[in-house]
Image 1 (cartoon, helix red, strand yellow):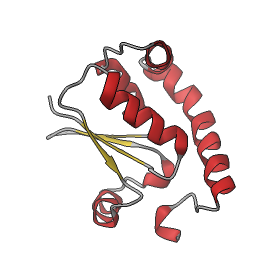
Image 2: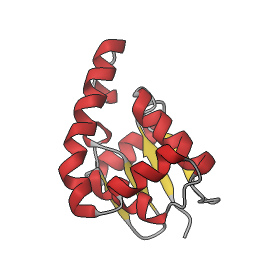
Image 3: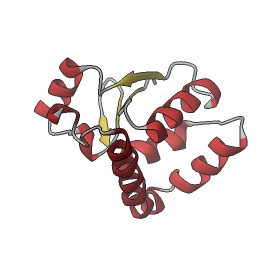
Image 4: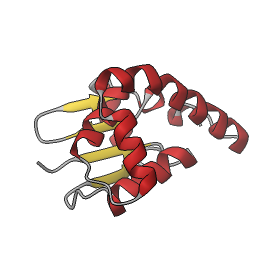
Length: 125
């Protein structure tokens, strides 16, 4: 199953997670795309009801997952080789735990973007 992860490239946490997922996640077909820099992709996702400012998006040919569901589904697929990704995999592969923890990730994202002077919603730039 080929997966595409769309993340907010302006957020250092999101960017690091996406890059680590690609490099050491054990998913050779994972495609990562910076949604902040790709307005056409953001528009396509927003038209389908998925706003990047509310969380990452994971897609395959048939499904789209958003926010905590996206991160949980991705973590369920990963076979990470480094300690940080193994920890994140453990924390977020359970969908219930991911939904409880995800608001904290969104808050960290908001703070990081604010410190950089970037809007939370890339379409509000």
